[in-house]
Amino acid sequence: MPELHHRMKPDEAVCGVKGCEKAAVRSLPTKKVSGNIAAGLKGEEARRTPLCKEHYREYKRATKDERLTDSLGWQR
Image (tube, rainbow, N blue to C red; front, top):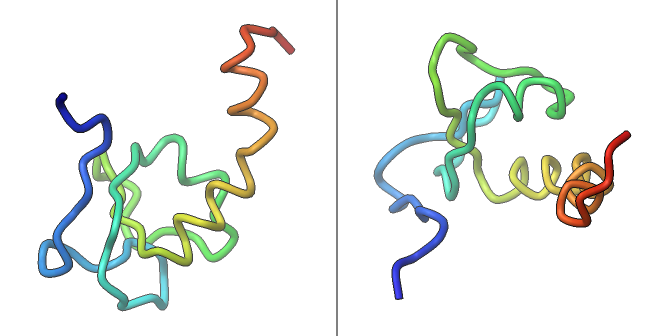
């Protein structure tokens, strides 16, 4: 079965959040990430933003309600 989410290899990239130099674990669309990460992004011109484990967790917590309503098919 194909993998649904691309997991980045540790040597592929560093986190795209300002002040963070940890290895990236996931890469998400910049439009979704830009409003949900408090520290801000290094470069918002790229299509995707690599995130380390801590910032990916922060993003997941910030968008929990939004993702739940999207999966249920409700409109706000």
